[in-house]
Length: 141
Image 1 (cartoon, helix red, strand yellow):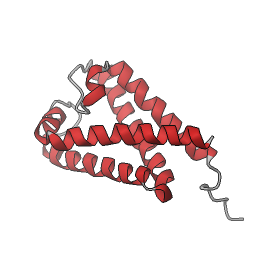
Image 2: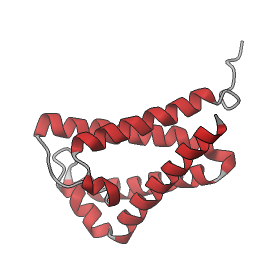
Image 3: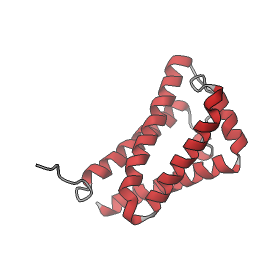
Image 4: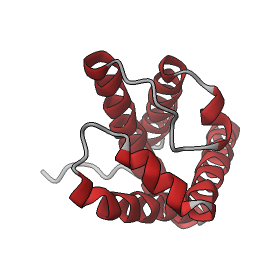
């Protein structure tokens, strides 16, 4: 089981490192992608860009540091689900087909594949949290 957790952990580190690097390397393009969204008001674009980068950085740090791995899995599950639902909402309600701002491998995925990928890794992160019982403290009685 520990090997499974480590494999998923390294995959998530790779994914978050690549997407974070892409956003930092071409910050202007990342912000421009946000402007294409029909859901985000233009006045919040800068804030959303900074929060996304900050949140992804925190996840990456938590996944890298052994002591905080479970926080990384918890936050990655949340963020991947949030982005998955966001993409699903865009595709279903707006027939959205603009390029994704994640870059790297995600730029080659269709939105359906991207949504499946996000939910799959969100579920894997959640499964790891549930299987790691030593991290989950019992409820007080």
